[in-house]
Image (cartoon, rainbow, N blue to C red; front, side, top):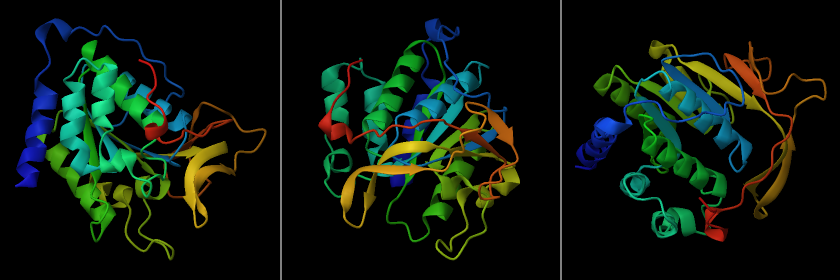
Length: 269
């Protein structure tokens, strides 16, 4: 069954760390001092350079405690095996090209920002951190066509935390999914954060202004986004989110830039 293969890959990812790498030989570059939590959900707008970087550097900080980190991403579960194969590879250009040689990364119809250069670079950063001793596994957590996507994604995280209770969980999802909303008119499903409330997750809204790669009814490309006020405090976690009243806090980014689909560019490493 798919679920058995899936958890097999995750189990290997969490346990197969060479003994020589157990020391923390990696450096982190956190963009904000996000409080520690056993479960943290970061809400993003897809298609930026800065938000995946914010998330992966927080994963690095969490790994610096010596704990196993389960880093959940809103990417299709069908890509899990390919990602694990890349993480186990040398990470060379041919390995990266092999990773993105799938319909998810190459499709003209799935260019909503999740198949961006920045997401590829996030995976590459995790690869580099693992080579330096960080105990981070990537958990791809989107079925795309699940009848209730948030329920399915929440159940995957619950199963991961139940199977690996000593691990900390970090999730990077769209901002509604990461919230603690019980549902709203435009999106009636209960969010991931709401469904995980028994785990008391820390939910973080990322506030921004600038540009992102996204899709509109007229097509996909660079779009103007953002609501950050000029006098906002940047690069700092601020408890109490007054943006949508559905997160525990907010991180303001003074400027975001668009990250195009990775199919257009395989960055250097």
